[in-house]
Amino acid sequence: MPGARPTVAERSSPVDGLLTARDAVQAVETELRDVLDEVTRRTRDVDALFARDVADRVAALVGRGGKRLRTAFAWCGWRAAGGSGDAAAVVRAGCALELVQACALIHDDLMDGSPLRRGAPAIHVDLARMHRTGRMSGPAEAFANGAAVLAGDLALTWADDLMTEMALGSPHGRQLHREWQAMRAEMVAGQYRDLRAQATGASGVEEALAIATLKSALYTAERPLALGASLADAGASVVQALRCAGRCAGLAFQLRDDLLGAFGDPAMTGKPAADDLRTRKLTYLLAVGVRLAGDRGDEEATAVLAPRAADRPGATVEDMRAALERVGARTAVESKIKQLAASSLRHFAETGAGLAVREEFTALVQRAAGVVPGHTGEAA
Image 1 (cartoon, rainbow, N blue to C red):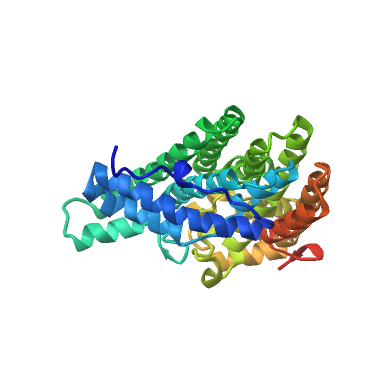
Image 2 (cartoon, rainbow, N blue to C red):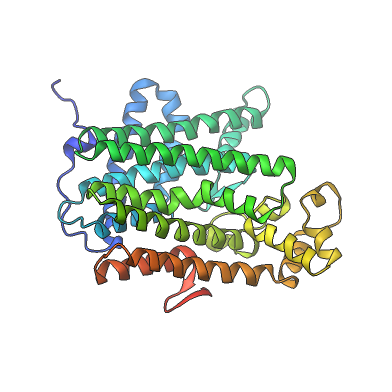
């Protein structure tokens, strides 16, 4: 049709010379601007009001940045599998991963009641403000919660459209689709396990690890590594080594996030501190704290940290932090992060990747796990 704009895949020129993960992230930032322009334009063609109220907010969230870890892991997977030259497909995969991340953040913030994301109001909070400012009828929170669900769905739709476009045009499309399909199912399953654990008052370490694996580790590192490897037509042994490396790195990332959620500075993290503690969310940190309190016979710490303690007034976030420190939970999680980061690097070496790519992956794992370069596992 005359005047029609090309799709993202059609207008993307070859991206050569992406020698580092940082190069890949910068390329994704540039491409994301074009992707967001295109998808918001399409949404305006469907309905201008929906685009203004919902699509523009999703685009703003994506545009505010983030760690872009999934992009960097996808690039490392591609390079470890022998990828070189034109990296346009890796860049587009990175864009799709950032969009599915936006879906996860929007829904997670809604379910957890988190007010802040990336240094700005969470989408459900901003939508409630819009409701009140516009003097709409009905409860602002009910409206905002429903609209936020749709916002997350829209981000996932954009991600799926981009990945489908890629898969249809790739000789490795079938494998790409399998990885993407599994990643989405795992992410949703992990979110449900998280909700159910809070409803049942679960406190076991194994349950906490299962949630962290499904909800975060797989789609943060393992699946992005495998997606990148798929684009380079990797062999089964390389993919298996990358899966193991990614699962360890992703868990290390989530455990660091647990620590930041309990002890971090909101000015640095861009999200509230101690929300997980206030709600007794089942994290590995809390589960280890409960177990260690029981092992040590520390009845005070057990009472403060137990999942059902939220039903009893008295214990504060400060009490919980003190208990976690006293029973050694914080130290134990730091040690676990160290072990996971080291295991991730060992598995990655099994891919046979060159020294330059191994060094890139090492730096990425250290950043994801929050450890000091050269002293893997020590708190940054």
